Image (cartoon, rainbow, N blue to C red; front, side, top):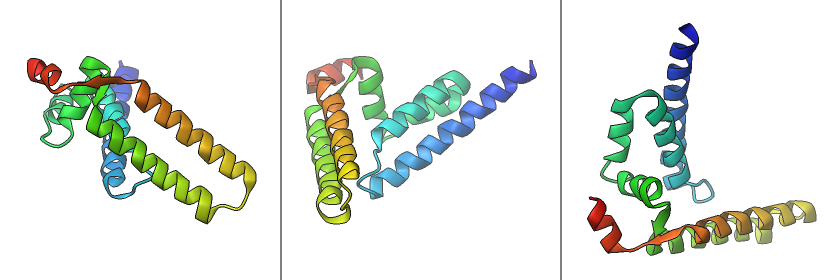
Length: 133
């Protein structure tokens, strides 16, 4: 019984950590935002219905989380912004801030992996979200 209670509070704390990281990611271009809110939603779904409902109904982040959870996708505009931000942030790091070749290769690999994942998600059209809402 104690382990279930510990697990619940651990997931709540982890969920709030992800919310904090996602919020920081709004202002720090290299830190992703949406994925942290998706992870927070998963934690809250397993631990707190109240926090989960708050997050998925949030006026700023809720739509993106619902789109991902319900349609396994992102709107085209969000995909373009995400891939552009990854390219700018990691590209500038590779060009201006890193001289070590293996670090450059690692960063390029991360950028390709993240961009590939984003592009592999379903592209959500307006009419899909209108039906869900």
